[in-house]
Length: 209
Image 1 (tube, rainbow, N blue to C red):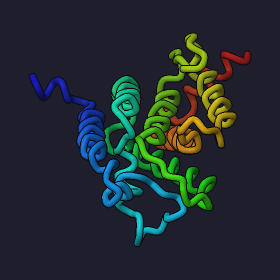
Image 2 (cartoon, helix red, strand yellow; image 1 turned 90 degrees about the vertical axis):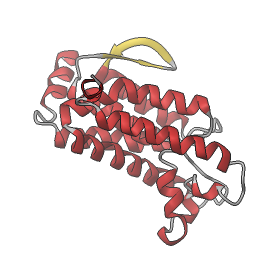
Image 3 (spheres, one colour; image 1 turned 45 degrees about the vertical axis):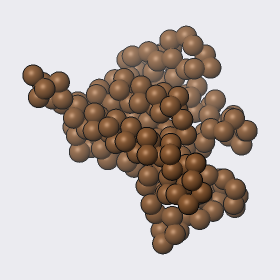
């Protein structure tokens, strides 16, 4: 019975577990000045010799329980579909590289800000959500700022537009990571999915046709 529960989605559950463990440790460590740099990504110090631990763990650490819950809820909802469509290895590649590309976007826009720090799996989660749009473009999704179900391709467009408009704001959200992760997830899924971008192209064609 336990094998059946994890069959086909073992990577998703493993990622959930890693996020929970790292975040629980991080909740304590983030209050300690000595350990805080090990759980956040500081773009002004994006030097592997100085900040590689923080650059890695920041993809799994979260600022609070709410932040952790929302990201893991999205991972739980979208991860299995992507994992089943791409296979475990390709799925893990999408997750990790989306997070890395999200961090690159954060570095690109905040590398001169010595006070800026980011953490959370949002870049990776955005990549997984956009990968799900590639492998299953016929579904409908909700945008938090516009809580009405919309076709997946339209959701993707709205998500990128809203995130772009919110960049540089003071809401404490690394929207740059969301955009970088989303773009990476979209591209990687199209390259790794057996059907490529064809299902998404057909879905977009039906919407505009």
